[in-house]
Image 1: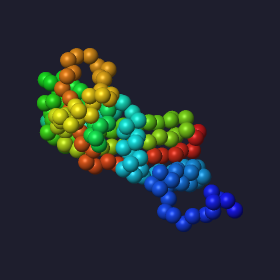
Image 2: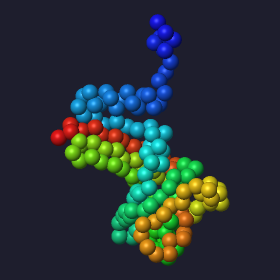
Image 3: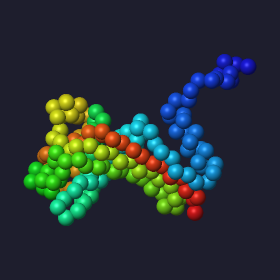
Image 4: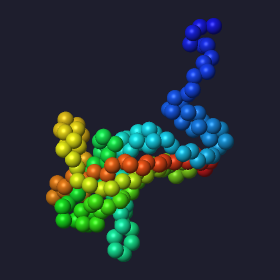
Length: 162
């Protein structure tokens, strides 16, 4: 038996454990899988459009924004005199990103929660030679905000596929 064929008793990596859970749920034809922090962060990093949620006097608001993930924080741009800067800055907010496949009845969702704040010098330094958040919406969106990913949770659902 070659070295690569020898069974090992090592604990599977988080990625391997997530993969095993995925295939086990698929074998059952459906399932709901809780995602670990690393997979949530990987999924956040893979997307560029999400939704920021915050409270206003008359209830909750959820708005789409273009973003990047940098140093475990969601960075996006907005207008300085807009609703987000008036109601969400320095408040606890949630940020959600997802992907769905209606045909296969499958998808995933990740939610990050933290206190929305102005982007820091460290954020700007890490963006200097990297990707910047590029808003699709027009307007003077020069205010950079950050939502630290203090709490992160996610789920993946594997459906019946029609």
